[in-house]
Length: 502
Image 1 (cartoon, helix red, strand yellow):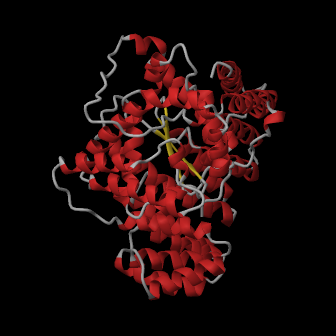
Image 2 (cartoon, rainbow, N blue to C red):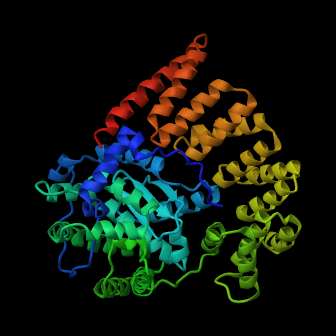
């Protein structure tokens, strides 16, 4: 369920730009791993003066510059890691981040969200409004409030501009750069915890101490802002302390600690501080979001070695102990679909549909049953009906486009995706499917244009330029399209040049 379209990362030794990042990773060692603001908590009395617009911090890195660099960082990051193409999961994470951002002190609340297909427990924030979440965070956080506590913490880093302030505070020492952050997070998303720990232990203690002295305050501040954001959003602020406690236990009982701890170490004092902060907030009754458990079911299915094993696990949960009965039933239905058992899946899913027939997650699962049965007409009608009642729903749009694609209705899929690509311009999954659809619909210029946009979003600029040049050659007699492609070619050349500054 969380397979990725992002299968193009060139090896470091074949891409000059990416080779710089890989080289930087080896050279900077722990400096890269600490680029996302590591930490142990300090006393409440150690408050920090927040930066003002026009101060020296803004002079080092302006907000506009952060935004530009953040977008470039995201493109190159995507070229190196597997990102989820699960539209339902992407939509859930985006909504959660957006809801929390509304209650955070962020000035610019427009956050670009990337969901990384990786079972390690990790999340990160990158200057310029980038939020990353590993699918493993869902496996580790037992409730939506716990999940939200990690997201709110990362929003705290963004709202307080910790990256820019690190540059200001460490002008004359090794500073966490965006290239460093890229190297660290690529390592976390590909090599895993053991490689990260090895990199940390290989670094001199003096360098580590230099990073921590400033970062402790950053982390304390992100804790404070994150817990306040949780409470203001109506979520349980105690969830932050609970999540920290689970992380600390993981360091004691598991061979490999959560990836998140490489940049956010947890201590007993930090847990106590989080609990104390939560006690100062108004009481909020803990909630147990069913939607969160539905998303967990999707990720847990993907983490099983085979659909058959997933069927056994969800069946056992449905008949026994589970976190949420609807989620256990939903996971079982998805596993049965994946195992090629549509009739059994429909029997499992039907009680959920009877209870909530307009729920997008259930409608999409029902359409998947139609598709497994090769009943394409029913699948597309079902999804179109749902979309008419929920216009703009990302998961339903992508589900309908995919159903049209599988049915061979390429022109219908093309019309839907071409329109949607103008709304959701920065989503690689949209451009990927649009390129495939253009090809089968016979629009070769459209193929080159869509593939160029896909490669741009994934930071593979050479490939993007290739497709744009092909498109330009094919549109010599179409002035308007030719001019658009020519301009896009110039844009990509500028992107290449700016990438060198990262």
